[in-house]
Image 1 (spheres, helix red, strand yellow):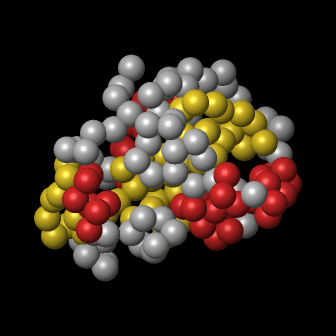
Image 2 (cartoon, rainbow, N blue to C red):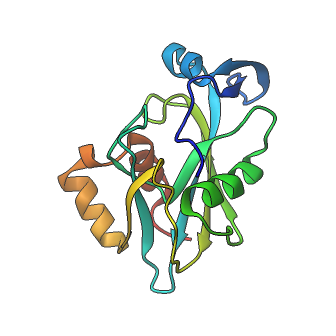
Length: 171
């Protein structure tokens, strides 16, 4: 099992155009609001339901909140697609399906100043959630996600809400 996170993980710091300009620790990046990189993966089953994870209470950001199927930061020197495959396997405990890039979001307050590449794929499970990362995971109908975001937005990581609104629900 992988550790949930470490404040001394090294991330690439990037400029407004997503070019690497240096490196910093996880703690520095988050404390100083430095631009950095992340991936989010949206996984759907044969019934077109989305698998969402509830983040571990040990997470430094949005503990106990619903989030994308899988997500995480890029390690220094890593590319987006490799990070998506790695994060999926680390968090969900199975080999990643074919992941297709949907879009890329620029840094914002809502996503913690991250450039975020969003991927989607098809997989019906079962998954073996990494307990240091995820306290719960389940399938949701798209309209159920919409209703929950409207009724209880605080139950979701703000980056997921930003992704969901931008995406519009179609793959």
